[in-house]
Every structure is written in structure tokens, then in C-alpha cells.
Length: 488
Ligand SMILES: Cc1cc2nc3c(=O)[nH]c(=O)nc-3n(C[C@H](O)[C@H](O)[C@H](O)COP(=O)(O)OP(=O)(O)OC[C@H]3O[C@@H](n4cnc5c(N)ncnc54)[C@H](O)[C@@H]3O)c2cc1C
Image (cartoon, rainbow, N blue to C red; front, side, top):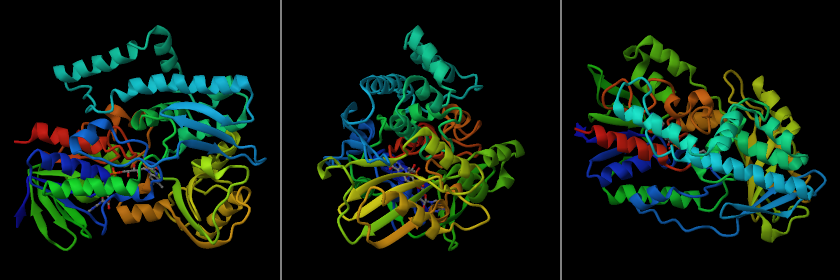
């Protein structure tokens, strides 16, 4: 039987970051990945804005930037699209129908949000404090978090506390008139979450996503595939053993301590430390098993909300794709979410577990291919998606902007398919909703929020932990640091 210092279940980008970091610290690490390729959900990501400078430096990641994708194009049925340029986080309008006053207010709202998200950003690289631990370190960390908010100054702190529970629609409607601009910002706030623009907390999700990505519009600046390849190279360089096409069936324990893992083919690997890159529900309820956990803990695990609602559409056209009224030189991230009302209507269907008649789209174009996030397409418990219907709806929207749509190939991947391929309960972008009761020291839920678990030697490192999803690798990085702290 093979023995390792640390075993990581899952080769998603967080699993790879954790493996790289731990092996660099001299640990003998095994990664077991269910699929034939590592990278996990990153397969569906279009955009990767920046990798955290800390992770880049520590893991020596050196991914070349892709150029010319600094623009955000918010499509409008009347073909008067809004085009924004993002120059290292500084936004300016290249084209818009919004008046001067709205343009200025839009930029000023974003700058305000940026200020608040910077404060939240300073919590991202920390293990969240344990509220009732009675430990001095946790208390100091809580005080430091409070102090960072207080440092915003009286006026800004009050404003942050005012908007944190608000819905984005209210804040935008109080300040702006232009529907397209309001739709654009609302879209950023709700994409990948289970919220509509009128859901309380949708400003917080925007601030939080902005804090994770260090940018309000998560643009494509780096090739995701190259990032994953470099992480895998980093693991290989530090002698991490990666076993692909192998699924972990069970986390093995004795007296509430981890002893190893068992694969579905019966093979057993031993280790006193196991990090799970699977989502929290899968880890606790399927891999560990509820029988070893106390009932209140199981209740909290079951209540963790993680219904995914983003599908992926891949289209290949016979011809090169042209968008009406947009010069090819300024192509970038395209968004079709033309107003708050439009998004809220799309969200209404999601509430009743139906896909939207008029979905929102976010897409990138590369010559004759188009790759889009389609939402809301909810994860369905007891029925199948009518994929052809959804594709038809998307094509009908796209054909308003793409004059010639001769489709050579089409493929829609639903949250159910993502869930099945990567073992993610609910097929959720962030492995679980980013809402106030599932953030920071409450992520994924109280009693499981510091990467460690009630079982000695078992840790979580997926997007379901603090700070949430995206491709930053911070979860893997923070979890690995916690394991190193505890390693005996
Ligand atoms: C449609 C879609 C589009 C997205 N687009 C973007 C984007 O543009 N930009 C962005 O920043 N983020 C995007 N995201 C979010 C981002 O991709 C995820 O948050 C991130 O990839 C999660 O990484 P992870 O390593 O925590 O988990 P995952 O990527 O889910 O990795 C978990 C890994 O564990 C493996 N695994 C699970 N169970 C087992 C088991 N029992 N045995 C062995 N292996 C197992 C899985 O196969 C998987 O490889 C998108 C997500 C979706 C769904």
C-alpha cells in the first residue's frame, strides 16, 4: 500500500495550487483526479483576468498575457451598443448612448465599489477567523477586519454598511437612467449566483467577486489552458504524483482521524492528511459519509445552497463571425443583458426551476467560434433539459447581432452535465452560493470555515471554501498554508 504525506482529492486548479505549494515545502503529495485531464471546471471558463501576484511568485507561474481583449461590449437590440475600454482597471467609454451625466455617474459608482472591494480584498488571503474559539489570534483577526472597514473613514464605512445588504437594482436606479449601463453592471453582480438584480445582497456579490478577481469586469487576459498546464508542470517539477481517470470513492478514517482514501477500483492509499478539492457537500456527505458526523453538522452541510444555473454554449459557424456595428479591432467580452428588467425576468424562471425564455448571454468570439455563458439555466433535480430548445433561444438572440449565422456545430453543456463530470453537487460555478450567510467565516458553513473539518487530517480546498470560486487559486493556497501549519 502506498503512503503519502498528503493526498489531494481532485485536480481542479485549487487542488493543483495546493499540491504545488505543499510539494514545494518538501511534502510527498498525491493528486487523484476523476477525469483524464486536470483543471476541473476551468474547462468552461472564458475569462482569466489575473493570477494573484502572491501565487504567481510562490509557484513561479509565468503565463503570457493575451492582447487586445480589454473591451466590454454591452449589446443593445437597436444596435447602439455600449463599448467600454478597461485600461488596467481604469474604465472609459468608447461608445455609448448614455448621456454625459450617466457616464460620469457610472464610472463614479464603479470607483466607489472598487474602494469597498479593496477592503474586502484584504481578507482574501487569510484563513477566516473562528468566531467563538476564544483564541487570541482569532480575536485579533476579527479586530483587524473591523479596523480595515473603519479605515475607510466614517462616510465610506457608513455607505459600505448601507449598501452591503442592498440589491444592485435599487442602487443603480437611484443613480442612473440608462438601461444598458444598469443591465451591464447588474449582469456582473449576478452571473454565476442564484440572485437576480432585485435580490438583496446582489451588491455584496459584485463587491466580493470584484475583490476575488481584483477587477470589476473579469476579462480574458490570460489563456486558461496555459494557466492549468503551468500548474500541472509545477506539480510535476516538484514530484507530485498525479493519477488521472481515477475516482476516490471513500475517505478512510479511524477514531475521527483520516487514514487515507479508497478509489472506486478498490485501491487504497494511506495518508494522515487529505485535502478535498471536491465541493463541501460531496466531501462530507458522499466521500466521508454522514455517519461519522454529528447531526447538526450534517444539517448545515445539507443546507449549503449550491444550485448552479449557468450553461455553456459552444458554436462553430461556417463563416467568420461579425457583430453588427462593432469593428473587429475592438472585439472583447460581449454581454447581452440589456436592462435590469430583462435580467430579472430571466431570473424569474430560475426561481421555479425553469430555464429562461430570454436568457442572458456573456460570450467571446474567436474567428468562427463563439463560446457563451448562458443563464439562467438551472440545475434540474428530476427532469432533463431540452437542450435544443435552449440552443434555439440563444441562436435567436445572437442572430439579432450576427447577420449570417450558418451553424456548423453546436454544443450546450448544462449544469447537470458539469455536476456529473466533475462530481459537483448542483453544478455550481462557485461550488455554492456567494451570499452573506455563506461567506468569510461562514463559508461553506459555520463549523467548517477554516479549511479544516471535524475530522483530524481532513481539509477542504475547493471553491466552496473562502473566498469562493473563480480561477485565483486562493482557496488551494490558503488551505495548503493551513495544512503546513498543522503538519506534524
Ligand atoms: C460555466 C462556467 C463558466 C465559468 N467561467 C469562469 C470564468 O470565465 N472565469 C472565472 O474566473 N471562473 C469561471 N468559472 C468558475 C471557475 O471555473 C470555478 O470556480 C473553478 O474552476 C473551481 O475550481 P476548483 O479547483 O475549486 O474546483 P473544480 O474545478 O470543480 O475541481 C474539482 C476537481 O475535483 C475532481 N473530483 C471531484 N470529486 C472527485 C473524486 N471523488 N475523485 C477524484 N476527483 C474528484 C473533479 O473532477 C475536478 O477536477 C466558471 C464556472 C462555470 C461552471
